[in-house]
Length: 256
Length: 223
Ligand SMILES: Nc1ncnc2c1ncn2[C@@H]1O[C@H](COP(=O)(O)OP(=O)(O)O)[C@@H](O)[C@H]1O
Ligand SMILES: [Mg+2]
Image 1 (tube, rainbow over the protein chains, first blue to last red):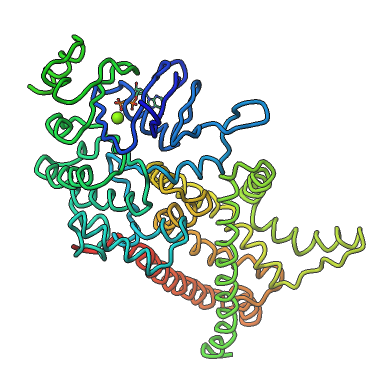
Image 2 (cartoon, each protein chain N blue to C red):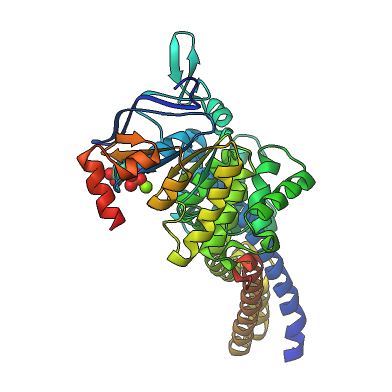
């Protein structure tokens, strides 16, 4: 892949004695929509959390837009990133969490405008305008003045998506965005994500158990197993004709 | 001296008690925030100072602190040539607020620590600075958790103000003691004293409940 926006180069991640990522190589192209599937504990969330700078790495290099994420250029080679460097890099990424993680003490509108005002320095009016457009996009224009606990899970997650988009990231990370939802609310969230995937040149990285959805919206699907990409490919290939036994077993288990 | 003659000096004393309670609770809350947040700081010196303050004032009695500030500090001051004599009001307010601040610090620290770590992660993902995360995201969610224990501390503080009568400050207890020395009518005086403290505590409790309702109003918004 020439000029990927995200690149993991022999990345090692450990939690104590547990090696979660063992020299992981992984690339995502500009504007590409990639789904990550795989059994629980295989390191899917860890990949997203490293990108969102919520977890550090023990070895290798992660680059975003050609620049090392967890390192910066020192006089003699790469040195660990400073908080200032992380802040600069973080501006390119946004994340949608499994548990939404909305700010419960702020209205929907303020959840979306707070960071653009405080972090990006937008005026209140600009931030509000941006938020209203995004609420329109996620179908919640009439809920701006509510508090998160007054909304359904599906609505909360759509606010979570709007909140992340308000920062205008280049890359949007979704960590099982529908796993905490009641089944009847999954559809409305997937619809919004699907629309984003279709209409925007945003790079999207989606960890999900919704196989049919992954197949519809992804350019590429990666099957994670024990901190490695066991198999990857176009969704038609991977879902209909997996090469690896592990992939076949996994798909059989989740599709039944 | 008639019963009605008791009222005026007692009301004067009560007003002093109210002022002492108000000033020391407000100053104590400021100290509680500063040292509770400082105890969570990664800055070594700040952390050490806050821990030392909290432990020192929780580990000694209010009465001894009060005597120390009022009687010992001026002597220590004059030994090194500085005038550290405090007016009784100041010594009283200081001792009370340092005390409530040390207990309040644990309340603040605990409430901040109880905010779910997911909230900090969401703030980090949105690129808030650590300071913004603390003041915009974490503390507003921690404050409702602090309110019930703060209410208790405020009432405790009101009751503790009685100790300042021992450094000749004209609070409610001091006035009552004066009248009793004069009339020897212990039963009436102490009964009135009891009722007045109870009344003030009741008002304070209601006020703190009101404050609690105010800071938790976002939780009660209905669909
Ligand atoms: N903070 C942590 N401390 C210790 N172990 C962790 C931590 N986070 C994740 N792990 C472990 O790392 C492995 C991969 O986790 P994760 O990336 O969350 O998997 P997935 O998202 O694929 O289910 C799991 O075994 C998990 O228990
Ligand atoms: Mg996960």
